[in-house]
Length: 470
Figure 1 (cartoon, one colour):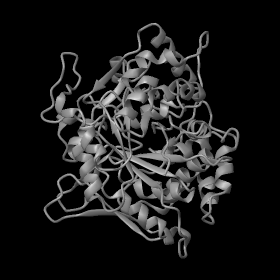
Figure 2: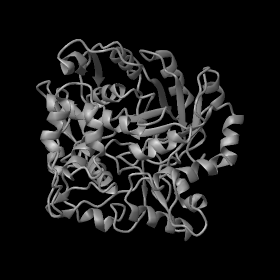
Figure 3: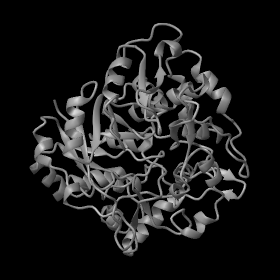
Figure 4: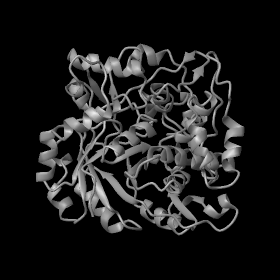
């Protein structure tokens, strides 16, 4: 079977939107949409009046009767949102979400994949985070309803996902075991989704997408290949210079004089062992150059995954003014990314691009009132009575401690949910003002200007593909 050579990275929230994924797929490579918090994105696009009508057009094709009508009734505002108005908040995900949130999540993932695949036969994938478990099942099912071709997942150990895909392909219910902090020996907690409950009748059979696990080591790749509950179809092998969340260094965390995690020889993946698994793999993290693509193939890879250079192209969801600032900073030699060991509530290192007016500036973030009103990265924990609670290290410190959290874990944490939503122009208007964006990018943003045509201050996905193909 022929696999794609170039995989466009799945960057959230809505940076890897349907327009970017569609553009890449039309060029013969694998376009990826981000499924991270896509329910919030759909709700806010509809509240803004759905300029262009793309969301409503996609929902017209949603196959489960009644769902699209209910989503539109709850969120669509034909007049759009007032410039001084806040978005209506979507409910936060829980172990047992309400049907309205489940339907919104399924419909949102369907819409994003449907639009990315509209009008062509090229492959489209979706990227999800293992760390965001509570929305995983409805996200997978919505994407599969739109015939998604690939599912990519990292930021954890996604051993359960292949089995979920198998169940949904058969129209059967699936359950996902949730990581709960403080769970006692023998205790297990699950979230469930039965497609028949959505259809209110027997659910149809669906094509089973290929599953690519995002890994940072041969050990993890071997574990997933041998111990997952279904077929793993390949791997994205990602290094620590890639954008977004990075795997922590192996062993005790050590910081450089600049305050970044220190990676060493133990963190270099053994590609020989990965290659010996007999599954295709792609290399990611500073591979967005023709010579690096050639090197990846010499090492036995099927190709490369590329994120950062796509993140700032015209088709991505990043606000145009942020793209322009990044391109100019790169040309001036000022583009810098800091691998922040504390920013993400997940505890994983997170790449933050340093830019004026964004959450990367201490004074900007210090002026923000701490709150958690989206909850995408909340941690599930066991209460004393055995029930499950939810907390986030970026919420008010007193609230976090009252829920059993350690105050030390709140130091330096950022609200990635609100910051990343602001990066794509869908930031909330809070009591203290509009949310500031937070930009994540890989180390290669420093040399972003290499893909920009001479004399231009923007570039397209086509320019990236042409450059990578040499």
